Length: 322
Ligand SMILES: NC(=O)C1=CN([C@@H]2O[C@H](COP(=O)(O)OP(=O)(O)OC[C@H]3O[C@@H](n4cnc5c(N)ncnc54)[C@H](O)[C@@H]3O)[C@@H](O)[C@H]2O)C=CC1
Ligand SMILES: NCC(=O)COP(=O)(O)O
Image 1 (spheres, protein in one colour):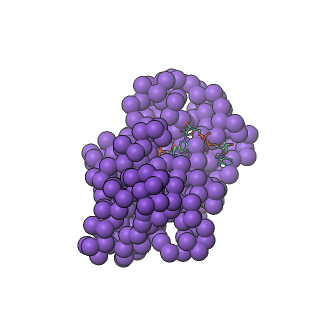
Image 2 (cartoon, rainbow, N blue to C red; image 1 turned 90 degrees about the horizontal axis):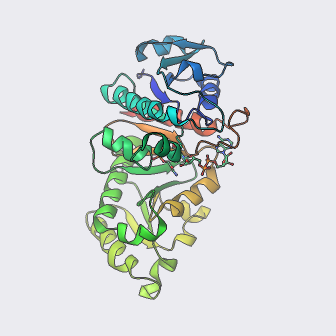
Image 3 (tube, helix red, strand yellow; image 1 turned 60 degrees about the horizontal axis):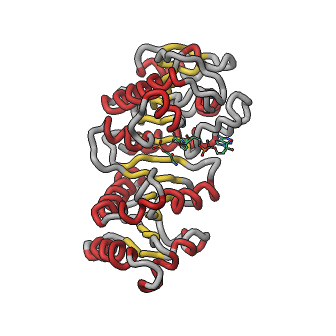
Protein backbone atom coordinates (compact mmCIF):
# COMPACT_ATOMS: atom_id res chain seq x y z
CA UNK A 1 0.00 0.00 0.00
CA UNK A 2 1.28 3.48 -0.82
CA UNK A 3 1.04 5.84 2.12
CA UNK A 4 1.63 9.59 2.26
CA UNK A 5 5.22 10.65 2.96
CA UNK A 6 6.44 11.04 6.54
CA UNK A 7 7.14 14.53 7.92
CA UNK A 8 10.59 14.69 9.56
CA UNK A 9 11.24 17.76 11.70
CA UNK A 10 14.82 19.03 11.90
CA UNK A 11 14.83 19.41 15.69
CA UNK A 12 17.55 21.56 17.24
CA UNK A 13 19.63 22.95 14.33
CA UNK A 14 22.77 22.98 16.50
CA UNK A 15 22.44 19.25 17.12
CA UNK A 16 22.86 16.19 14.92
CA UNK A 17 19.34 16.30 13.39
CA UNK A 18 20.22 17.75 9.99
CA UNK A 19 23.17 15.39 9.56
CA UNK A 20 20.88 12.48 10.45
CA UNK A 21 18.25 13.64 7.95
CA UNK A 22 20.85 13.52 5.19
CA UNK A 23 22.14 10.10 6.23
CA UNK A 24 18.61 8.73 6.58
CA UNK A 25 17.75 10.03 3.12
CA UNK A 26 20.81 8.26 1.64
CA UNK A 27 19.80 5.01 3.35
CA UNK A 28 16.06 5.13 2.63
CA UNK A 29 15.71 6.98 -0.68
CA UNK A 30 14.60 3.82 -2.51
CA UNK A 31 12.65 2.36 0.41
CA UNK A 32 10.13 4.94 1.65
CA UNK A 33 9.24 8.61 1.26
CA UNK A 34 9.78 11.38 3.76
CA UNK A 35 10.34 15.12 3.65
CA UNK A 36 12.33 17.33 6.00
CA UNK A 37 10.88 20.47 7.58
CA UNK A 38 13.85 22.80 8.00
CA UNK A 39 15.39 26.18 7.22
CA UNK A 40 17.10 25.91 3.79
CA UNK A 41 20.05 27.92 5.15
CA UNK A 42 20.67 25.25 7.81
CA UNK A 43 21.03 22.33 5.41
CA UNK A 44 24.40 20.58 5.16
CA UNK A 45 26.07 21.56 1.90
CA UNK A 46 26.65 17.88 1.21
CA UNK A 47 23.04 16.93 0.52
CA UNK A 48 21.17 17.43 -2.77
CA UNK A 49 17.90 19.05 -1.69
CA UNK A 50 14.74 19.93 -3.59
CA UNK A 51 12.35 22.39 -2.02
CA UNK A 52 8.68 21.47 -2.04
CA UNK A 53 5.50 23.37 -1.36
CA UNK A 54 3.34 20.38 -0.61
CA UNK A 55 4.10 16.95 0.92
CA UNK A 56 2.55 15.24 -2.11
CA UNK A 57 5.63 16.28 -4.14
CA UNK A 58 8.03 14.33 -1.91
CA UNK A 59 7.64 10.79 -3.26
CA UNK A 60 8.74 11.59 -6.81
CA UNK A 61 11.74 13.61 -5.58
CA UNK A 62 12.93 11.15 -2.94
CA UNK A 63 15.13 8.87 -5.12
CA UNK A 64 17.16 11.82 -6.42
CA UNK A 65 17.18 14.46 -3.68
CA UNK A 66 16.11 15.14 -0.11
CA UNK A 67 12.66 16.76 -0.27
CA UNK A 68 12.61 19.81 2.02
CA UNK A 69 9.55 21.80 3.09
CA UNK A 70 11.17 25.18 3.84
CA UNK A 71 10.55 26.67 7.26
CA UNK A 72 12.59 29.83 7.92
CA UNK A 73 14.28 30.13 11.32
CA UNK A 74 15.64 33.36 12.85
CA UNK A 75 19.15 32.21 13.75
CA UNK A 76 22.10 30.36 12.25
CA UNK A 77 22.86 26.67 12.74
CA UNK A 78 26.21 26.44 14.55
CA UNK A 79 27.06 22.87 15.62
CA UNK A 80 27.04 22.48 19.39
CA UNK A 81 25.94 26.06 20.03
CA UNK A 82 22.16 26.44 20.20
CA UNK A 83 20.99 29.90 19.18
CA UNK A 84 18.07 31.15 21.31
CA UNK A 85 16.72 32.88 18.18
CA UNK A 86 16.03 29.44 16.67
CA UNK A 87 13.82 28.22 19.51
CA UNK A 88 10.57 29.55 18.02
CA UNK A 89 11.42 27.95 14.66
CA UNK A 90 12.05 24.57 16.28
CA UNK A 91 8.70 24.71 18.05
CA UNK A 92 6.81 25.91 14.95
CA UNK A 93 8.33 23.20 12.77
CA UNK A 94 7.04 20.54 15.17
CA UNK A 95 3.57 22.11 15.11
CA UNK A 96 3.66 22.24 11.32
CA UNK A 97 4.64 18.58 11.09
CA UNK A 98 1.91 17.62 13.56
CA UNK A 99 -0.68 19.56 11.55
CA UNK A 100 0.38 17.79 8.36
CA UNK A 101 0.15 14.41 10.11
CA UNK A 102 -3.28 15.22 11.54
CA UNK A 103 -4.59 16.38 8.15
CA UNK A 104 -3.33 13.20 6.46
CA UNK A 105 -0.98 15.13 4.13
CA UNK A 106 1.80 13.28 5.99
CA UNK A 107 1.28 9.68 7.05
CA UNK A 108 3.27 10.19 10.27
CA UNK A 109 5.50 12.60 12.14
CA UNK A 110 9.10 11.71 12.91
CA UNK A 111 10.97 14.20 15.07
CA UNK A 112 14.72 14.80 15.23
CA UNK A 113 15.89 15.62 18.76
CA UNK A 114 15.29 18.93 20.47
CA UNK A 115 17.29 20.39 23.31
CA UNK A 116 14.80 21.02 26.07
CA UNK A 117 16.94 23.61 27.82
CA UNK A 118 17.54 25.57 24.57
CA UNK A 119 13.79 25.80 23.98
CA UNK A 120 13.17 26.87 27.55
CA UNK A 121 15.84 29.56 27.36
CA UNK A 122 14.96 30.74 23.86
CA UNK A 123 11.17 30.59 23.91
CA UNK A 124 10.09 29.68 27.44
CA UNK A 125 8.80 26.39 26.03
CA UNK A 126 6.44 25.17 28.76
CA UNK A 127 6.52 21.45 27.95
CA UNK A 128 9.18 18.95 29.10
CA UNK A 129 9.52 17.48 25.60
CA UNK A 130 7.85 16.55 22.32
CA UNK A 131 5.59 14.00 23.99
CA UNK A 132 3.73 16.50 26.13
CA UNK A 133 3.74 19.20 23.42
CA UNK A 134 2.28 16.79 20.86
CA UNK A 135 -0.45 15.77 23.33
CA UNK A 136 -1.34 19.46 23.56
CA UNK A 137 -1.32 19.88 19.77
CA UNK A 138 -3.36 16.72 19.31
CA UNK A 139 -5.80 17.85 22.00
CA UNK A 140 -5.51 14.67 24.04
CA UNK A 141 -5.02 14.53 27.77
CA UNK A 142 -3.12 11.28 28.15
CA UNK A 143 -0.36 9.89 25.98
CA UNK A 144 2.31 7.26 26.56
CA UNK A 145 6.02 7.33 25.73
CA UNK A 146 7.17 3.93 24.51
CA UNK A 147 10.76 3.11 23.53
CA UNK A 148 10.87 0.19 21.12
CA UNK A 149 13.52 -2.09 19.67
CA UNK A 150 13.69 -5.72 18.59
CA UNK A 151 15.09 -6.62 22.02
CA UNK A 152 12.75 -4.71 24.30
CA UNK A 153 9.82 -2.30 24.55
CA UNK A 154 9.55 -0.08 27.62
CA UNK A 155 7.14 2.56 28.86
CA UNK A 156 8.04 5.03 31.61
CA UNK A 157 4.76 5.74 33.46
CA UNK A 158 6.10 9.01 34.85
CA UNK A 159 8.37 10.78 32.37
CA UNK A 160 10.37 13.96 32.80
CA UNK A 161 9.93 14.69 36.49
CA UNK A 162 12.41 14.69 39.37
CA UNK A 163 12.93 11.29 40.98
CA UNK A 164 11.75 12.69 44.30
CA UNK A 165 8.33 13.43 42.75
CA UNK A 166 7.81 9.92 41.32
CA UNK A 167 6.02 8.15 44.21
CA UNK A 168 3.35 10.86 44.47
CA UNK A 169 2.93 11.05 40.69
CA UNK A 170 2.47 7.30 40.34
CA UNK A 171 -1.27 7.38 40.95
CA UNK A 172 -3.73 4.55 40.23
CA UNK A 173 -5.33 6.69 37.51
CA UNK A 174 -2.02 7.35 35.74
CA UNK A 175 -1.03 3.69 35.92
CA UNK A 176 -4.43 2.54 34.65
CA UNK A 177 -4.36 4.98 31.72
CA UNK A 178 -0.77 4.07 30.88
CA UNK A 179 -1.53 0.35 30.75
CA UNK A 180 -4.75 0.92 28.74
CA UNK A 181 -3.12 3.19 26.14
CA UNK A 182 -0.14 0.85 25.83
CA UNK A 183 -2.32 -2.24 25.39
CA UNK A 184 -4.46 -0.52 22.77
CA UNK A 185 -1.38 0.84 20.95
CA UNK A 186 0.23 -2.59 20.77
CA UNK A 187 -3.00 -4.12 19.48
CA UNK A 188 -3.88 -1.48 16.90
CA UNK A 189 -0.49 -0.16 15.80
CA UNK A 190 1.87 -3.09 16.36
CA UNK A 191 -0.44 -5.99 15.44
CA UNK A 192 -0.13 -7.78 18.81
CA UNK A 193 -3.70 -8.98 19.54
CA UNK A 194 -3.15 -9.94 23.20
CA UNK A 195 -0.10 -8.04 24.41
CA UNK A 196 1.76 -9.46 27.40
CA UNK A 197 2.37 -6.54 29.74
CA UNK A 198 4.87 -6.71 32.61
CA UNK A 199 4.74 -4.02 35.29
CA UNK A 200 7.96 -3.18 37.15
CA UNK A 201 7.80 -2.54 40.87
CA UNK A 202 8.73 0.88 42.18
CA UNK A 203 10.73 -0.29 45.19
CA UNK A 204 13.60 -2.78 45.53
CA UNK A 205 12.28 -6.35 45.19
CA UNK A 206 8.86 -4.84 44.35
CA UNK A 207 8.54 -3.84 47.99
CA UNK A 208 9.49 -7.25 49.49
CA UNK A 209 6.06 -7.76 51.02
CA UNK A 210 5.84 -4.20 52.33
CA UNK A 211 9.18 -4.23 54.11
CA UNK A 212 10.84 -2.07 51.43
CA UNK A 213 8.04 0.35 50.55
CA UNK A 214 4.26 0.24 50.32
CA UNK A 215 3.44 1.50 46.79
CA UNK A 216 3.87 -1.86 45.06
CA UNK A 217 1.19 -3.47 47.21
CA UNK A 218 -1.12 -0.50 47.67
CA UNK A 219 -1.03 1.13 44.19
CA UNK A 220 0.45 -1.18 41.56
CA UNK A 221 -0.94 -4.59 42.62
CA UNK A 222 -4.66 -3.60 42.73
CA UNK A 223 -4.48 -2.01 39.26
CA UNK A 224 -2.76 -5.09 37.85
CA UNK A 225 -5.40 -7.34 39.45
CA UNK A 226 -8.13 -5.18 37.92
CA UNK A 227 -6.74 -5.64 34.42
CA UNK A 228 -6.28 -9.37 34.96
CA UNK A 229 -9.92 -9.65 36.02
CA UNK A 230 -10.83 -8.08 32.68
CA UNK A 231 -8.73 -10.66 30.83
CA UNK A 232 -5.79 -8.40 29.99
CA UNK A 233 -2.43 -10.20 30.25
CA UNK A 234 -0.73 -8.03 32.87
CA UNK A 235 1.81 -9.39 35.35
CA UNK A 236 3.59 -7.78 38.28
CA UNK A 237 4.66 -5.83 40.10
CA UNK A 238 7.94 -7.54 39.20
CA UNK A 239 11.29 -6.78 40.84
CA UNK A 240 12.82 -4.41 38.29
CA UNK A 241 16.36 -5.71 38.75
CA UNK A 242 15.54 -9.16 37.39
CA UNK A 243 13.10 -8.43 34.58
CA UNK A 244 15.44 -7.24 31.83
CA UNK A 245 17.74 -10.22 31.23
CA UNK A 246 17.10 -12.19 28.05
CA UNK A 247 14.99 -15.02 29.51
CA UNK A 248 12.81 -12.57 31.45
CA UNK A 249 12.31 -10.33 28.39
CA UNK A 250 11.01 -13.29 26.42
CA UNK A 251 7.99 -13.43 28.75
CA UNK A 252 6.47 -10.05 27.84
CA UNK A 253 5.86 -7.67 24.95
CA UNK A 254 6.29 -4.47 26.93
CA UNK A 255 7.60 -3.46 30.33
CA UNK A 256 5.66 -0.71 32.09
CA UNK A 257 8.14 1.05 34.35
CA UNK A 258 7.60 3.48 37.18
CA UNK A 259 9.98 6.22 36.07
CA UNK A 260 12.16 7.46 33.22
CA UNK A 261 15.52 5.85 34.01
CA UNK A 262 14.03 2.53 35.13
CA UNK A 263 12.70 2.20 31.58
CA UNK A 264 15.36 3.90 29.50
CA UNK A 265 18.51 2.46 31.07
CA UNK A 266 17.80 -1.15 30.01
CA UNK A 267 16.49 0.05 26.65
CA UNK A 268 19.49 2.21 25.80
CA UNK A 269 21.93 -0.36 27.15
CA UNK A 270 20.51 -3.01 24.84
CA UNK A 271 19.73 -0.94 21.74
CA UNK A 272 20.93 2.68 21.94
CA UNK A 273 21.90 2.72 18.27
CA UNK A 274 18.52 1.51 17.02
CA UNK A 275 15.88 2.27 19.65
CA UNK A 276 12.80 4.23 18.60
CA UNK A 277 10.67 6.50 20.73
CA UNK A 278 6.95 6.18 19.88
CA UNK A 279 4.15 8.30 21.31
CA UNK A 280 0.99 6.22 21.84
CA UNK A 281 -2.44 7.76 22.29
CA UNK A 282 -2.05 10.64 19.81
CA UNK A 283 -4.47 11.14 16.91
CA UNK A 284 -1.51 10.62 14.55
CA UNK A 285 1.64 8.49 14.37
CA UNK A 286 4.79 9.91 15.94
CA UNK A 287 8.21 8.32 16.19
CA UNK A 288 11.69 9.64 16.99
CA UNK A 289 15.23 8.34 17.44
CA UNK A 290 15.90 7.39 21.06
CA UNK A 291 18.84 9.74 21.52
CA UNK A 292 19.24 13.46 22.03
CA UNK A 293 20.94 16.38 20.28
CA UNK A 294 24.48 15.06 20.85
CA UNK A 295 26.10 18.52 20.88
CA UNK A 296 29.48 16.91 21.64
CA UNK A 297 29.63 15.34 18.17
CA UNK A 298 27.45 17.76 16.14
CA UNK A 299 29.07 18.93 12.93
CA UNK A 300 31.71 16.19 12.95
CA UNK A 301 29.89 13.89 10.55
CA UNK A 302 30.14 10.90 12.89
CA UNK A 303 26.57 10.67 14.26
CA UNK A 304 25.06 7.20 13.77
CA UNK A 305 21.84 7.47 11.73
CA UNK A 306 20.54 4.00 12.63
CA UNK A 307 18.07 5.09 15.29
CA UNK A 308 16.61 7.75 12.95
CA UNK A 309 16.42 5.22 10.12
CA UNK A 310 14.58 2.77 12.40
CA UNK A 311 12.25 5.58 13.55
CA UNK A 312 11.32 6.36 9.93
CA UNK A 313 10.91 2.66 9.13
CA UNK A 314 8.68 2.08 12.15
CA UNK A 315 6.56 5.13 11.27
CA UNK A 316 6.17 3.75 7.76
CA UNK A 317 5.15 0.30 9.05
CA UNK A 318 2.65 1.83 11.47
CA UNK A 319 1.19 4.03 8.73
CA UNK A 320 0.91 1.06 6.38
CA UNK A 321 -1.04 -0.84 9.04
CA UNK A 322 -3.46 2.04 9.78
N1 LIG B 1 13.45 13.11 21.33
C1 LIG B 1 14.19 14.12 21.78
O1 LIG B 1 14.00 15.24 21.35
C2 LIG B 1 15.26 13.86 22.79
C3 LIG B 1 15.97 14.93 23.25
N2 LIG B 1 16.94 14.75 24.19
C4 LIG B 1 17.64 15.97 24.61
O2 LIG B 1 18.94 15.98 24.04
C5 LIG B 1 19.80 16.77 24.85
C6 LIG B 1 21.10 16.04 25.08
O3 LIG B 1 20.83 14.88 25.86
P1 LIG B 1 21.93 13.85 26.36
O4 LIG B 1 21.44 13.30 27.65
O5 LIG B 1 23.27 14.48 26.29
O6 LIG B 1 21.82 12.64 25.36
P2 LIG B 1 22.34 12.45 23.87
O7 LIG B 1 21.62 11.26 23.37
O8 LIG B 1 22.23 13.71 23.09
O9 LIG B 1 23.89 12.11 24.01
C7 LIG B 1 24.38 11.11 24.88
C8 LIG B 1 25.68 10.52 24.30
O10 LIG B 1 25.34 9.70 23.18
C9 LIG B 1 26.00 10.14 22.01
N3 LIG B 1 25.08 10.07 20.88
C10 LIG B 1 23.81 10.51 20.84
N4 LIG B 1 23.28 10.32 19.65
C11 LIG B 1 24.23 9.73 18.89
C12 LIG B 1 24.29 9.28 17.53
N5 LIG B 1 23.24 9.39 16.70
N6 LIG B 1 25.45 8.73 17.10
C13 LIG B 1 26.51 8.61 17.92
N7 LIG B 1 26.52 9.02 19.19
C14 LIG B 1 25.39 9.56 19.67
C15 LIG B 1 26.40 11.60 22.28
O11 LIG B 1 27.50 11.99 21.49
C16 LIG B 1 26.65 11.57 23.78
O12 LIG B 1 27.98 11.17 24.02
C17 LIG B 1 18.99 17.09 26.12
O13 LIG B 1 18.47 18.40 26.01
C18 LIG B 1 17.88 16.08 26.10
O14 LIG B 1 16.73 16.53 26.76
C19 LIG B 1 17.27 13.52 24.68
C20 LIG B 1 16.59 12.41 24.23
C21 LIG B 1 15.55 12.50 23.24
N1 LIG C 1 14.42 10.62 27.30
C1 LIG C 1 13.47 10.59 26.27
C2 LIG C 1 13.24 11.94 25.75
O1 LIG C 1 13.78 12.90 26.23
C3 LIG C 1 12.32 12.06 24.62
O2 LIG C 1 11.46 13.11 24.89
P1 LIG C 1 10.41 13.63 23.83
O3 LIG C 1 10.99 14.91 23.31
O4 LIG C 1 10.22 12.60 22.78
O5 LIG C 1 9.19 13.85 24.65
